[in-house]
Image (cartoon, rainbow, N blue to C red; front, side, top):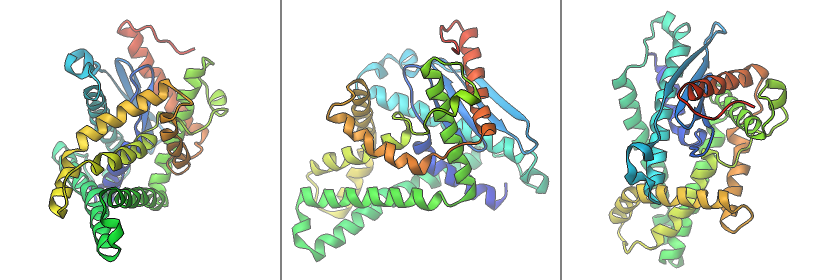
Length: 325
């Protein structure tokens, strides 16, 4: 595996939470390298366009976490289960897409398919990078600012500044990485995924022509979820009775599962009560999708439709009731 492919995979892993959409009701999806993963309630399909132009797919059945483990039916825990499965599935889809695009491209130049240990190493590096960039750096900067401006040392003010810095880093990172051609193409496939999901939900026949009429911004996008996570974390960190840098950092890392679960419940509630106060939490995520989604080409939309069709065909084969309108 070449160094360029390694860096590209690392960049995709960093954007993975923003590109995925967990969907517990009908259809969800995720953009991958030169393709799209679409998920129905009990099946999924990854469709990728190879350098030759051929579209290859990988479709498999997939049981819901709550059906296998009843514990994950409870609030907060159901969020952890669904998010964990979504990220695990996203990594598998990303690996399939990376190998498919390497097959005729970099593989001819001496590259190799991405092995399990390569992916595991990249995941560890990505997690360490995430903790450093979104936990250590904001906390360090907020601590320095608190020393220069004593009024910021209060628990509420400190955590508000820490949270704003974190959000600023997140937005800046997305803007910076969107300048990379490979990532821009992923953002185009992200837009294709959203349009096709909208097209399916409308009840109209799912075609490239019909999909063009729909926006690339979707309220269930992972980008919106990440912003909710950051807002929830500000409130939760304020409750921590810690003052030292080390204990604050440890608390931020250890509370990640709880924050994710609470954020999932907030987004879930907002989706069921549109127009309410909590629904405003997802609005900034729609604005931010101007960075993480781009208008796709018809060919990219066609790949998303292929992924949806194959996922739905497998769903029907398993006795599901969902059909493409």
